[in-house]
Length: 339
Image 1: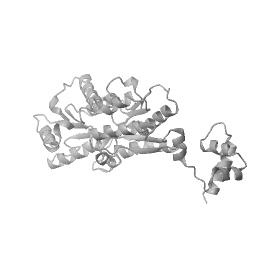
Image 2: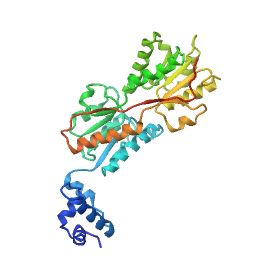
Image 3: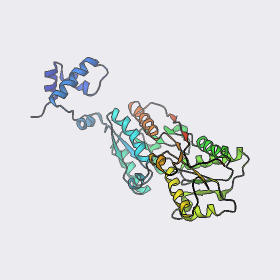
Image 4: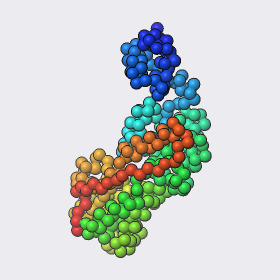
């Protein structure tokens, strides 16, 4: 026979209303009473029907997680499992579940977000990317639903709650590290140009060159959207320049792995012939030969703080927009050498 709130109340010697308040973690109930009631619930094997409670409270106790493209592709990049680990930790502590977007195209993802919001399937949304002219972000701005973005929104960022790294200064510091090792011919293999993180890192790269009187040469830059499917050829062309780069900064460790593979095919050694550095500090980077120098951008913390911010807005919708910067640090390994 199913155990009810009345059964728990009787055994704990409290009223059913008190049991209900304990389940809702009402601050008016003392810690001692909560502990006693929870112990009885555990002994009796009573599990509250949260779905029924949520319907009454008009809450789903679920966070929507929106990825930049299809889930299948997203999970190939170690950034996503790690940022989800941070979100999950915070969600679990607040007894929230996660609802992942599964759309394969921008249109499908947009439609999914509209359904999430209008169907009240989620209480809040975390957008795991920031790009120029994104219809999803515009829709969320117009909606009443609490949301947070991982990355700096391109337009009017102060009106949006987001968590980010200082990508401009981090990229600048990374290039200055290579300049400090004696490099002056430094290439930049960037991400897609409609992503704000790519724009910011390119800006940091250019600032570092300018501050050290190194003229910017577009031939030393390669962007993902220009080379789609022609990655190998782009790296071959880069290394065939009259003065080839002695160092390469890549947008992401995953890109660095690809570049190292193409360089090997060209019989170009890392770091003997060219130094290389990535971003994101994926676990595998330390096991490469040579181990990859990279920038740790605190991916877990990006997820944790984004979930914290959106849950704060769910609890109190009058919470103003917040902008949080998470630290980054350069990790020196064997893929860079002094000239």
